[in-house]
Image (cartoon, rainbow, N blue to C red):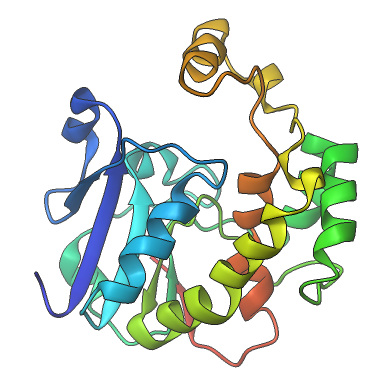
Length: 215
């Protein structure tokens, strides 16, 4: 494996591999948990030996530019740089991911965040918007996050039903996608848990003095 960067992209259908970056390491995920890609992150990151680590979805190319318009192609060389965290799908500095989640998910979000406050201090709003775990972090930062925050948080969540209630996400998806998800999981809506965890890294680094860049 590349000693400078371990750049994983998760996929779950063979046809999705064509969307992956040519410098990525494909990672097939056949085990969909209620924590979504966070289960993969918790497994891969601790055993990865590289200076920088990323665990992104197969849809990263599609997602780039949804916020700030990026007029540059993402390359391996661009990621070999001096930073602690590189955001791959950056949003405007005025974007408010915690507030937007409350609009998108309503009561499911408010109830789950109220409970999450028993685990971690949550700011009124985070300084950096990171969606879908689309970031690269130095090995030390990422491994520390997984060890002291992500894994304990998933354990904390596991005994609290509030994190596994419906998120309302099914309303935003096509009938075909909802049916496909139902066949895999037996559920008709996505749980709120992965949407909470999607913002956990931003919450965790919020008060840290890290060098954070957009790529």
